[in-house]
Length: 142
Image (cartoon, rainbow, N blue to C red; front, side, top):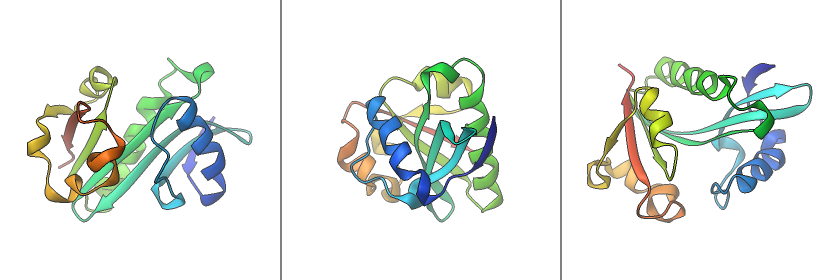
């Protein structure tokens, strides 16, 4: 399995995976796709990203059921963090319903929604796609 930059051609498969996992796809566009873990032509994992200058929103991370518990999610997050850091991003933010313990193990801290920068508050995920009780998390990259 290899991790590569996601492309617009991955969008239909990405939407199907995310929808099957109960994750938001309403506003998902090709530019939100960051990296894909692929086995042949099949996407086994995917992570999304929205950059906003020196901060970024880590969009949904999804792993195919048969590829879970192999470290693929951790590898995708690490790849995204490295790329974001290289692009001058200082902090990654995310919203999650049920993966807060997972992201905490990767160094993300839970914050109050009121702590979110205005840019993150203005994203579709924060403003409405994720429910109001979603956990807000942040990781400083620098």
